[in-house]
Every structure is written in structure tokens, then in C-alpha cells.
Image 1 (cartoon, protein in one colour):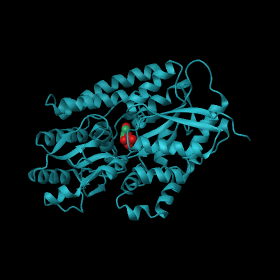
Image 2 (cartoon, helix red, strand yellow):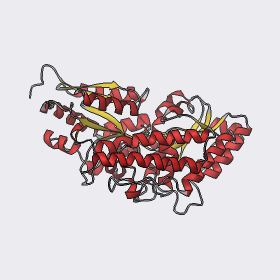
Image 3 (spheres, rainbow, N blue to C red):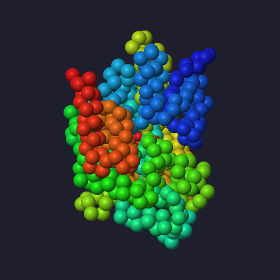
Image 4 (cartoon, rainbow, N blue to C red):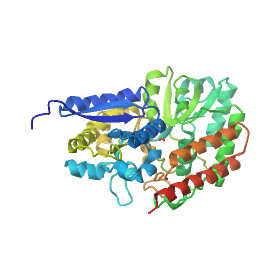
Length: 427
Ligand SMILES: O=P(O)(O)OC[C@H](O)CO
């Protein structure tokens, strides 16, 4: 088939800042160079939440991009978005493109499947949260630089020594909702919400005012007062603190490795997230984060040309190749989303050359089968709930409320969001 004189343009909005955004755009450039029929045009639209808001506004204005990169938090909302979304299974079937989803990690594949098991969005940059530690700081504080603290007790003890050694920020965290609420729940096999964290229906209610999360929030408040923990802001704002050498221990996305590798001027290591030793059955697997790609209709008027959807499907076929996925994983710290990609990285000696780079994968796979509490989150309106979590945590860190009050407020305000979403989307 002769290539079209002018390639069909596919608009692709993403939410990754540098250096990750540039690395993603290189993958797009690879696709464009691999064929002449389609041209994917990437465009950075701000943070994940900003990209989501922009895509919804564009759909309303009949100018949505063909593909939007949506963080996992938006999944529940997108699943209910009806005609705005072109479901992945439909897109691929119509384009005659086959992708072997059986080879994808169940934790990744399942996150983006409808209740009937059909794939709704295209997995790509999946992460999980891990702890990076600054070995130079550990040495300065008389701690063994080769060993990261495993439990929250050990983290607090190390933080006290780091502080005593004059370090201003022993511990910080990005993504307060994802890492200090959702991951803590999964690691201890405790439900974040009823109905299997929302996977089993729209009627779920939040359960974060449980003794474990209240205890954890009170610890964070106390550690912050004592100068052991620094609240680093909403979403990924705290990502800058670790590579700059300010904080000794940072709980962040595994994808932060991209920036740390480039910017950190000190020795560092990667460890699993801390857990509470006295909780029976802990630690379990962590949950994924990151984003997937959603194909969107242009708006309420005018259908997309068949050729445009074909271009989207061909782009997905390209990024599903284990070599491409493995390259992305090795360059960024996002996890391989396919078993075959993991093998590509292993065969290339990547894990031997880069100790700790398999920690996120090991942590995702820990404990065998996932449970209803460790499979992920599927709540509509969850982007708004994440903001509520951040607001209530901030009030607590400002001394306006204790851990119990913060978690109660999250439940009360979050449930109102869930009920609104349920009313708008049921039936
Ligand atoms: O920084 P990312 O891409 O790993 O995303 C982290 C969180 O999952 C966002 O909700």
C-alpha cells in the first residue's frame, strides 16, 4: 500500500514534565520514523490533573486530542465517560490490530479493564512508589549506607539520627494521597473503600478513617513537628527535593529514577516502601500508578475518520513491542508492563548493572495473588478526592486537626463526591 502523501496526524496530549516528557516524545519520534502513513504529534499539557481537565474541556469544545495520557487516578471517571472514550478493545478490533494482553502484568492489565474484562485504555507508563535514600547522608549520620530502613519504626529512627547530624529534611514524600494513603492501605491489605476499592460497583464508600491510617497520619504529623518529615506539597511537587540533595529519604514514584539518575550528585539506593511490622500479613504488594493512554472522540459532533483510529491503533502496536517497553523502563524507572519486556531488560544485563532497578517490580509482585485491597483503586471522581486528601493532610500539618479528624473529613467529603458521581453515572 502506497503511503499517503501527507501523513494522517494524531494529536497526543501528555502530562509528563522533563526529563520524562522528552523521553516519551522520543518514543513518539521513533514511531513516526518507523512509517510514513501516520504522524503522532505530542503536546505537553501540564501536570496529569491539568492534562485531564484540558482534555475534558477540549472534548466539550469538539476539539479533543486523539490520545490523552491519563493518570491512573482518572481511570474510574474515564470508565464512565461514555461516548467521549473510544474503548481500546473496539479501537483495536476495528483497526485489525492485535496486542497480546495476556503477556501484560495482571496488575497493569486489570487496572484498565472494564468489569467484563475488556481493555478500555492502553497501558504504557506504569510505576509504583518506592523509597530512594541518600547514602552520603546516611554516612554523615553514622548509618550504614548500604542498608535502607524497612519498617516505619526504622525510618523514624534513621530520621532522628539524620536530623541529629544536621540534615534539614530526613524524609519526604511525593503524591501524598497515592503514597501515604493508597499505598499504605495496599501494603497492609486494608481496604481504602468498600466494594473492592470500587472495582465492584459505583456504590463504594471510603474507609480511610481506620485505625492504621489514623495512626500513620498522626505519625506523619508528629514527625513533621519534630523536623523528621517534610511535607513537600501536592502531587509530584516533592520530586525535586531528593535529587537536589535536600532530603535523605524520599517516597516517590519509581519513575523519579529518570531525574535522580541525571541530577543527583551523590550515592543513592532504591528500597521498598516502609511498612508497620506489627500489622499481620504485611507487607503485601504495592499498587501501580503512572498513566495509560485513552483514545478520545473529537467531541459530541462529527466522527473521526477510520484512518485516524487506525493511526492510533498502529501507534499502540508500536509501543506494545517488548523492545520499546523495555527501553522506556530502563531509561525511566517505570516498570515493564509486559513479561516479555522484563525478559528483554534482564537478558540485556540491566538489573545486574543497575542494582535496585528491579525493586519496583519485586514490590509489585510481592505476596503472590493480589487481594481486593491490593488490586488498585477504581473510584469515580477520584481526582477530586485526591485533592480532598491533600487539603485535609495540609490542614493537619498546619496544626488545625489531628489524624483522626483528617481521615474523618476525607471520608465525609470524599463520600459526597462518590455519591454525586454515582447519581450522575448510574443507569
Ligand atoms: O509519577 P507517576 O507517573 O508514577 O504517577 C504517580 C501517581 O500514580 C499519580 O497518580
